[in-house]
Amino acid sequence: MSIKSNAEFDIVVVGGGLAGLTAALALSTEIAQATEAAIGNARVALVMPKSDRIDGRTTALLGQSVDYLEKLGVWQECVSLSAPLSTMRIIDGTSRLWRAPPVDFKAVELGLDAFGFNIANAALGNALLSKIKAQSKIVIIEDSISDIQSGAETAQLTTANKQSIYARLVIAADGKNSIMRQKAGISVHKWQYPQMAVALNFTHQYSHNFTSTEFHTEEGPFTIVPMTDLDGKYQSGLVWVMHPENADRFLLQDLAKQEKQVEEKMQSILGKISFATTAQQFPLSGMIAKQFADNRVALVGDAAHLFPPIGAQGFNLGLRDVREICTFAGNALSAAKDPGSLQVMDQYNRSRRRDVSTRTGAVDMLNRSLLTDFLPVQAVRGLGLFALANIPVLRKFAMRQGLSVARQKPSSAA
Ligand SMILES: Cc1cc2nc3c(=O)[nH]c(=O)nc-3n(C[C@H](O)[C@H](O)[C@H](O)COP(=O)(O)OP(=O)(O)OC[C@H]3O[C@@H](n4cnc5c(N)ncnc54)[C@H](O)[C@@H]3O)c2cc1C
Image (cartoon, rainbow, N blue to C red; front, side, top):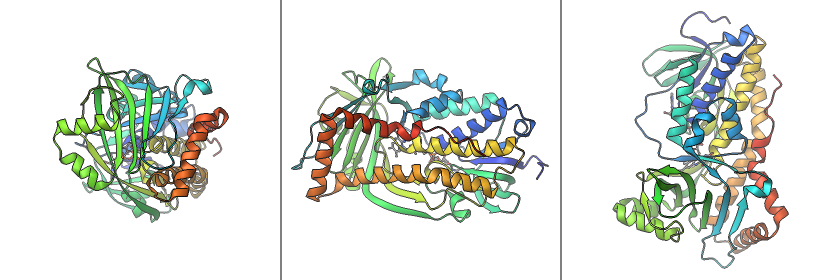
């Protein structure tokens, strides 16, 4: 197909969350750096609705996620906005029979300065969008997609404003309730957890010393992650996973009571605290798409997989989706081939299955091991943490596992 009109694109990215913005920047960078005319002249669009919702969360970026953002030329803008994560501490905060001692994972044990960096989602999103706009290689359409029909040569997308646009490949980054996924006929395996995550940022009296602390409780993890200072005060992000009815009770309290409860829960390890953002809640569920690409639609980020915010894996996994599909599509375009062909769909499906299944399974197992009342499982979890605390070789192995998939080389074959 040759591109004929302003509404025809080689690739359309749908969704302006972190995954969609990174995909758009990756493609924009490929076009900007291209030496072959075939990809240098590629037409790419990003469709994103105007959003008035401020994402108050932070994201811990691990391993090569940071290297990838650096390669895309955006990390340089983010360095001063992010806090390094030098130590990750797990504290068994359950009151169960099998309780383990605290385990510290130190980046220095792997010869690293930090496992990664924690950054506010809004700051990362703004940096990505500014870079995309500065490169001016792709068309930004402020709209949302309501329908898609895939054909032999293109997919036809209909926007909420009744515009028609055409794409050879659609990169669907439209989140967990992805309309693109449903319209492409991709079914999912999904499940629920009896948990709600409450997320907020707070300033505190004592330094976090770049240590992320995860209290394991019977209702889920209570995780504090270092952030950059706010107005000269130490700052951290909190993700507190609890039963939905306890989350409701927590959120109904006034600010002073919420702050007191959070400080008590973290055993005042950071001294006096004060909320810097309003608490937001996120119901926890799990989902994995049965295919990651079909009918000219490739799923990335939460559109492809979803799991509880434990061990900072969600967006890190989404970045690997983005890296893979952009590599496959970029290779196809460079060779003047169809970026939405069956071959590209097939390559992407095969390349993502193992990584996504492994991460989803591991996070699910860890989360369920906290929730269970079954004594042998509690014992195994307690002994596992005990072994990690006391056996350096095992601890190093676990640390590498946390970062390992991110350290895989990106696929290059088209
Ligand atoms: C409390 C919490 C803490 C987390 N912490 C971490 C962490 O530390 N590290 C980590 O790696 N991950 C973390 N995650 C996971 C991470 O936040 C998500 O995986 C990531 O934000 C998903 O980004 P996304 O772009 O795929 O989806 P989304 O952020 O949901 O973005 C989807 C976008 O698509 C747009 N959209 C939807 N429908 C349409 C349509 N029809 N047309 C056009 N646009 C559309 C939406 O407006 C939205 O902007 C956390 C998750 C939670 C809940």
